[in-house]
Image (cartoon, rainbow, N blue to C red; front, side, top):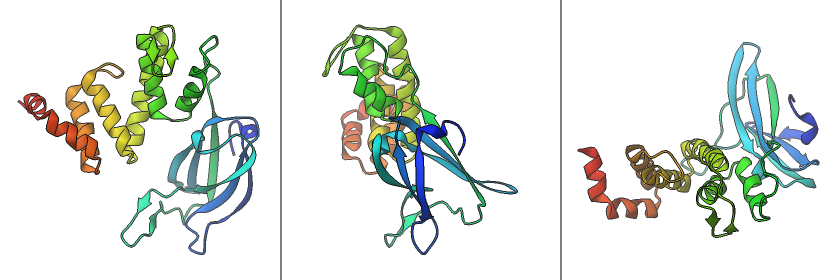
Length: 225
């Protein structure tokens, strides 16, 4: 393991099952929350596969949780999980990304802390909540002093995480990001791109995204002209 090895404790490495497609390990976060666990599978000749596990998947403290490297990416016909082929790998390198020291800005209302931590751990809705709160000075959680710098920070994090998790198949995130890009409030205004994200969410089966397209058909057609 490389970088910030003291933040995570791993034990009981083993194969998940007889197919030996995934390594299983017990994970403990003795010093508190983290942002991500990143991993690289390699051979002596080079790269095999890489990815990350969000820190929000783990509860800080002395309790252990089971993690799988690499994680499943979906379910194929017949119910078999889809897992990247790392059977040729001879080395697994793990990196731990800590939360930024300013993940929870000082002097903020109490409700900000959990949202800020969750955002840094990879929660797209929490990033959007804070982006909107610092842009407007209010939210459903309570009031906060408007701050352009913090609004920009959380907006950028919302967009970056939204693109990543949408690409990984998070349907509701695709829809959320699409609406933000269309509206231009908590993301740079880009209606064409926003509609594309909404259409992707609809194509993946999210009814709310399909309903939005029907309700906004004229505006969508106008963008295409």
